[in-house]
Length: 128
Length: 128
DNA sequence: GTCAATGCAAATCCTTTGCATTCGG
DNA sequence: CCGAATGCAAAGGATTTGCATTGAC
Picture 1 (tube, rainbow over the protein chains, first blue to last red):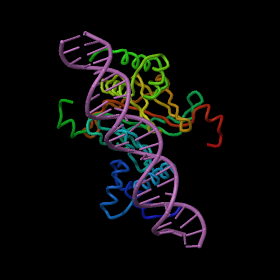
Picture 2: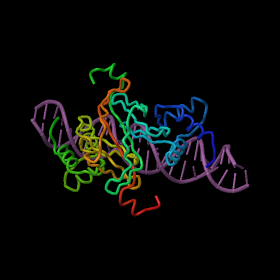
Picture 3: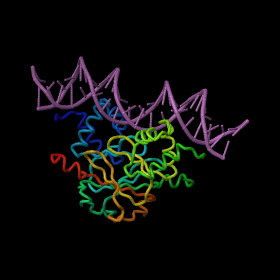
């Protein structure tokens, strides 16, 4: 696994951002900062990072994959109106420990997602 | 909203099945039972049902949408090897009530997913 | 009879793959 | 230099859309 500026860019971007960008978002940002990355490379890099457990792949209702630097015990809050994904500070929530056996199923990871309306959408559009 | 045999078929299928079929699965089953439904109609029907809250759309790592008749307080267990999605009987797990306000975000729904290895995959392939 | 709902096929969009080229070690 | 990693373009696969046709009411 060689160190390339493409990989460095993707990882550092994900570490900096908390808004769960898509592959497209990452490519746009790269081009904007003068880093050239092809779409295929983005997907390959992200896929490797997901396999390595560094990055988490989130699938939302828009059918587009969002990528998230792995931060344990985080909970995602998805706005049903604008689709934005927020991180819920983990201290605010008690995550029950699900790592038990259920009928022979061995639980390795848990993911909690909450859906609702974010502050902005609730204010802007009271009719939803 | 007119009652058609396509809609009836899709809804009754989802009510009967607990294995979260994809649009393709639904169409296959329909054809097998002699009910003719085009792919577009399946997607339109499912999309309407999701909007109406009758059906839940699940997105898994295979990038294919799975559909699930809405049963409150269910927890999904996804096998990381074979991709099967199981329902966890809700009595077996304590679902914390997340319906609070977090920084102006109003929580309406919660979804908990657990990932691991199902019994079969764990037995068959100890190397994973 | 009307118009919502369907089926078909084409279009669209995200993601993956094949392959020649580049560049890290 | 060698071969892993990249970029490009084409391919693949799921979902959506346009439009003529069908069928529920």
